[in-house]
Image 1 (cartoon, one colour):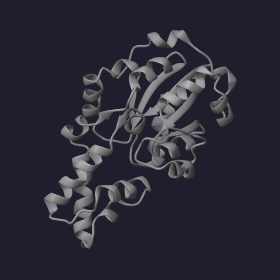
Image 2 (image 1 turned 180 degrees about the horizontal axis):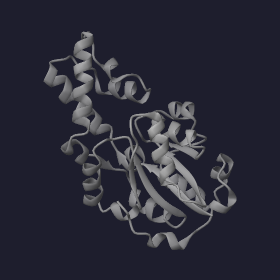
Image 3 (image 1 turned 60 degrees about the horizontal axis):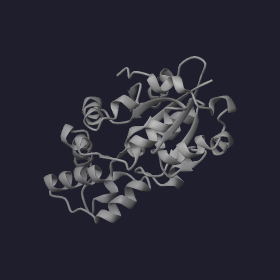
Amino acid sequence: MKLQLMIELEGAVADVMAVYWKAYTHATDELGLARTDQNVFRRVLRQGHPIGATIRGARPDKIAAFQKLFQETLEADETVGEMVVQDEIRAALSRLRDFGECNLVTCGSNKGARQRWLDEHDLSIMFTRMAVLAAARDRRAVTMQGLLEDGCQALVVASSPTVVATGCSCDMVTVGIAGGVATSQKLTQAGATHIFADLGDIVADLEKGGSTLLQCGLPPGAVRRDWSVSTNVRRF
């Protein structure tokens, strides 16, 4: 049974906290809004509160304008290009490809900028496909299901509640990565069956027989080395 991994780009592969803060400071400065402390911002973000909760004393129309500009800035080419590669990610992906096919998923709309970021950091070769999950819940599920090939077993590796919930809605085994913009508690509440510290921890579990992933629901036939997948060529 071939294993197909659906890995969320933001959090699992890229550290995005710095670019979130950049988008936040740009939006508040442009609109002349008082911004909160960076640690408070991080806490609000990771606990899943609306981003508008980081703006103190602003009128509803100002908050709406801020939210719009924040999202636009977050998806700008320059901002996406400043995402930081997670530590030891290349080694983890190289080992992971011995067990299955790696695919990327993202909730970000700027696919082109993300592709350029992957190319710049020599990460494109590690993945077969990249899919953008739409804002609409039903469309996200259709996209996720479309990545799964017949006869394959999916493993969703998510760092946001949105991608966790999408994987669960598709009846896919879904685990969380703690290094994203959501707390482990929020990922668990969204349906993640286990929270790993990073992608390297998932690889380590697979290399030891996958006991944790088996407990999460992955069938034994999917927890094995498949040397043929290491030669896959990306299709995005």
